[in-house]
Amino acid sequence: MQQLFILAWTLLYFTPTSLASGWLGAVKRSLTVNTGDLCFLTAERTTLLNDRLYFQGGDYTFANGDTSAQEKQLYWLDLNTSFPVDTIIPSNALRSISAQGSQAQLGGAFFTDALLTTMYGFSAANSTDPLDTVEAFNTTTQRWSNETVSGGSFNGIGRGGSGFATTSTSGLGLGFYIADGLNGQGPPGLITFDASTPSTLTWTKTFGGTPNVDATAMLYARYGKKGVLIVFGGYRNLFEADLYDMSEIFVYDIDSKTWFNVTADGEIPGPRSEFCSTISTASDDSASFITIYGGYNIHQGRAYEEVYVLEIPRFRWVNMTRSATGTTETQLTKTFGRYQHHCELYGERQMIVLGGNIITDGGSVVVNAQSCNTSYPAIRLLDTSTFEWQQQFTPGSQPYTIPPRVAQDVGGGPQGQVKSVTPTSGFNNSALTRIFNKTIPRLTVNPGSISTATNSTGGQPPLSTASASSSTPTGAIAGGVLGGVFAIAIIGVLLYFFCYRRRKKTLRQRGGCKESELSSHASVVRSRNAFHETHAEDRPHEIDSNGFVEAPVVHAPAKPACYEMSSSNE
Image 1 (cartoon, rainbow, N blue to C red):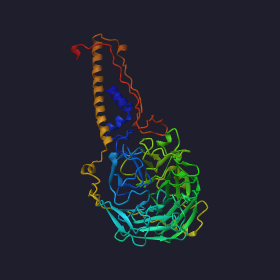
Image 2: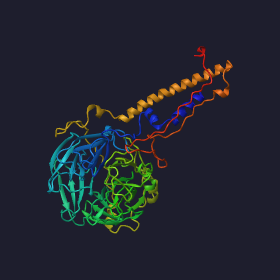
Image 3: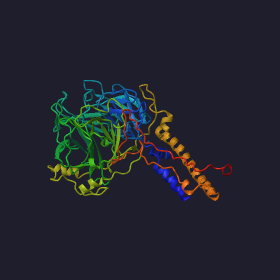
Image 4: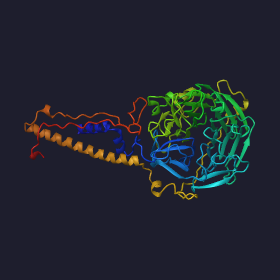
């Protein structure tokens, strides 16, 4: 019996991981490309609402379909189901609904209402003249509508684009956009979109100290009486390619409508634009941490495969690139970088990276735009607590904990208790000290349930009854089938082994073959096939232009030919 257990364990351990994963009911990821898979997207607008990651606008490339094309669809991924990441987006995980009007425009942003049921497309209208309307999508009824916004005409094509400064507040119904003043829009100003009362939408534009920025990052943080906006990176002047130093941080206090400047220190990233960013907060609210990924430096002609953390309110940069493990891109023979992508944070810990252009160092060609190659993932997932790139999105999120290296830097622990809460040289304005000494409590919002109603533009329902009720991806089903076959094979091997021992014992009693002739000629070849999770220290298998991987060969056991069993032993 002990030998049987050892044999079974050996077969399970050394079997290609894809089969083992299928046997357990979940294939981690596939390196094959199927018709309809989403291979590339860029300059899209995104929002995370009701456990769905919505995205729209920009350019898309599908397997055996459109290439670098603008699609008049609203897409989403259901975050209540598991799906592979660090690869292309499989068609069976992608949902869509026909878009209204001209929502295929590049860039822009989605703002949300206070109830987290409706999202509004900003910079989505196909009009060179500013409009006082926005296109709205209600996620409960799944219907489009045009909504009038009082206070001015601020919506139109060109606002936002691929290089924008926008952010939205979860549960407050506020959205912010910096009009850069570079496309005939007048002096730079901050536009505030207010959907706190969904029946009465308003927006205002304020000037007075608004920085001139483009292709930058802007995030909302729960400090002060009403919160603050933190802005950094991108261009001071896009047409002159004048990049900001990443140590120069702008802070906007929403309550007093005042802009401040803060100088960050630490391991400062190089100047860049078109990176993505998210913000997480320690469980005790003692500090917040902005994670940025990627970006583009126009002077060096390179994109970055780098990850940094900006500690708030200490305003100190920490380079976490070396800590970010498990990435496909960094294992390739050339150095790749990504820009014009977007990030959304799920559960304050899982940073979902969507789309983006990928180029090599010193190159100008976007290598992922025209073809489907699984080496250039359309979606990625970074755990901002462990800084490990994931290969599978799993619903539910563990609480955010401060990464050990960052916790050591700020003098805190995993849950917070942060001691360093001011810049190294202190704030240059006493008002900033007061603002960052106060934290707004977290909000809990319970949005309405998701329905599957037909949208008002006559498009098809986004989900059929079958697709809505099923959360098992096709890959997992295939893996289960393969796993079932493998399980039967194991049982057959065990039965053969058991019978073989009985027959060997019978032969010994009958003076049959010699013991040396009965030794096993079989050997198990340990291999890691194409479906195995790739770690930083692993070398990936060679991938052809279609994204296929040549699987390693597993040799079958040689057949012993020592004796022939008589009919009495059968």
